[in-house]
Length: 277
Image 1 (cartoon, helix red, strand yellow):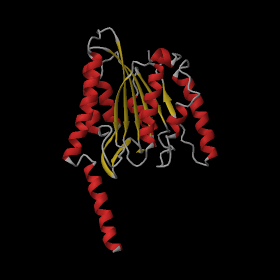
Image 2: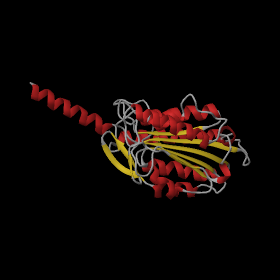
Image 3: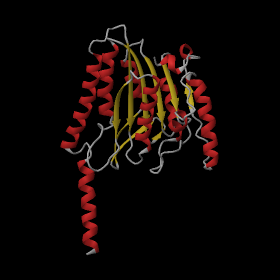
Image 4: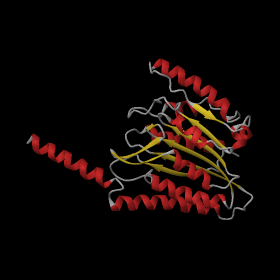
């Protein structure tokens, strides 16, 4: 009887796990429908906008299913951006699995490519201000894509660089990466119109990504109640870094994650509220 129950248990999770993955045709189709709906909502918003109007778009990608912290990061960032500017429109991708249905399209390289193809077209018609967050487990030049315990093609710096280069030159871009070794993305992505914040140095782990964690430490502390939209990104980052150091010491985590930031000269000393409005 025990052996029979074990077989049923394994069979159940094998079926459920397969059903809620891109490997299943129906689930993959549902993911495509959810992504298309977000694109349709964005196109509806753009109708009637004139070419000289600024368009504010947020792309949040929670790429690993083994912790809800990544999805919570995406939602927290979305909430904060809407507080700064209610005109932000969101494209949200997630690999969080609830074993019943998809809430969001899968956060895969393919779907991110589709998303930035749409954004590229938009940037030729409107003045685009873009904020992108990728939250996941990582390694040097690797941002993992994991769906229900299966790994898919990761996101690398070349992918992100291609996305950034596909946007018009006058687009304003802010990239947030919350992952281990995410500092390895700064130099490959360095551009005059791109602000980059990462959860760690290129040779360090970051923290807050266990299944029990609500948010990664980086996003949790960056968008803490002390976040000040009247201060620039660098000012908020300095305080964020201090809070993370204290939290890591409290939890006896070593070595420190050593978050990184790159702010091009043209964006220095500009309050976040002004930059995103």
